[in-house]
Length: 287
Length: 317
Image: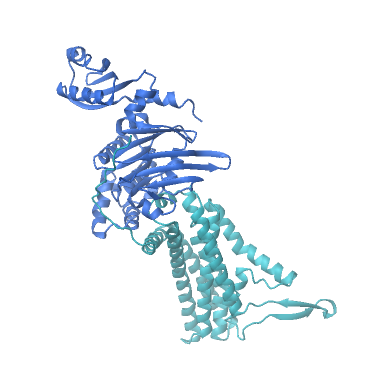
């Protein structure tokens, strides 16, 4: 029935690149896709709007209404708003990064090629991180510009630490959003669930667990992100017990995440969600 | 010993209690085009997805050149171009960029990339759209780019899942010509299709599947003669470059060995009912050529394949 194998004589003789090189290819074209689509520019505009509002507020009311020291200024500006920028980056670039490959059927264009799924996943993740870092860098540059204008060129070292923690938080958030994106096959569902979790659910759980249950919420990523703002507070805040209630008999704990704790939470979230997300994508079927 | 190019070994796929593919054993090797036929839900796309690791087998193995696709996808698919289920391309990219991505993934040298991309895009008649964003393309235009992506690295094996889907009649005809030209370049093409005329025109062999089970895999002529219900007779359509004389038809052709009947379909085409072995068929072809009647095509009739299909596959889902 079948003839002896006739070997084809392809004109182009290629050797496949390494998986790491293929990650680079994925990153390159995913970034190109981000820059071409409106997504990157919408987030950039949101970042610029937040920066503009803060700039206008400080200019209108005077810097002394918000901070009297450089550290206080960065705490007001950066510590209060950067987590929102990070979360929005996670939602914009990670929310449907994997689920979109299924829903939009773009995955069918890639997966039939000789490359590992892990190369697709990692390449897309690095692209999302790169795009988010650009947004974060622009946001940081505007904050520093304002800081220099009002308090001179001396930037407190704590701001450098906060910047590093913000990047760490971004890495953890993208790990988490990619994991969630791998759970769903619907883009809108994965974006919606991620947005609800980061914008409402985590904060709500954190308040309930810490205030009502009086348990340190070490298992919540947003609690770990507290180090971004805490490090800009001098002295660094610690967990405190406050007496309150009738006759001052009830003791309430106000939890403050320490730097080692915060780093451990963020790194833990990233490692666990990245591994599970990757495994899910490896096993997910294009049905 | 030659290595089979495509081999399914006890390949099965189940979704809960539903069996999408059941114990498929199929071995295809050599340069040829194999048509993969079956009704909707028969397991055609499931099979092709298993051969590209888009889904995992419940049991068995999908091997390409002896390499398990699931266990070593990168190596197994290195010489494979595929088009499964009309993929979408990132809408913000242009065909040039999307194809560059595929070329880079496959390690095509930079020096050859530009020329090769322009070549395959020209082959699918999309050169005018090379630098326009894919998001603005129609379904048929996207499918043409998908076909060019499958051809880009000149793979020795092509897995095509209904490649004519979404194309207009001209596009379908162009795809047929592309596939035919690939056969001459020593490629192995495994192509699912609902278009029986397409399969009978292009393919050398057919595999028919229904309810996840392989019904038959053989040379097209053998399948038609065994299952068309014409008692071992096959119908051959003959295309000519000029009008044929009635006398030649009645005297020469009708009396050739194995010819049961011969009739004119129009001035430049004949339909011959034939009974005999492949060797006899080969002789018939050489005799027709010797008649110098301007023979340009000779293939089993699509209606014969349709009869075969209807006889083998009793009902659709």
